[in-house]
Image (cartoon, rainbow, N blue to C red; front, side):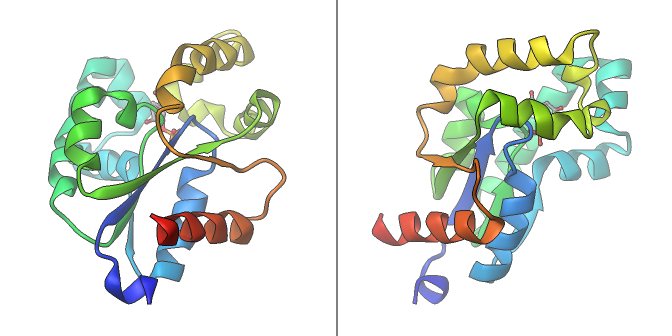
Length: 174
Ligand code: S3P
């Protein structure tokens, strides 16, 4: 019922390592929606990795791409969108992209995020610093209030299937 009648897209936000892409891909399968990942779209469109964009043109260029992609995705339906960790914290992106979508913020304990990110932090330019753990804690603290504005889905200690079910349950209650 939910799968056939719902048209609104589902947006996943949350800090790096919160599981947006993994959960989003599975959620899209279950809902029979198309899955898109804003970071992957930017890489494809720009032709460079995120790290290269940051290095060669600076963070502003990457943030500009995020706003372009937000505009483009805003008018589409039945998408599950995994957004880059800061995309939805920008007021303009959030109002454009979020106007016709269900939004959920995936969360996890800071220690859990740190553990998850240790595996592949080199793909994340913001963590390409001498002390990535400290950087993660600072960014989490700086962004906490903004993430808290969205409905929260705690991912710690849960399986992918459990998290997907929880999101679908939340959507069906809205
Ligand atoms: C960023 C998160 C990354 C990516 C970029 C910046 C951020 O996406 O968009 O490195 O500022 O939080 P993920 O959250 O998918 O890692």
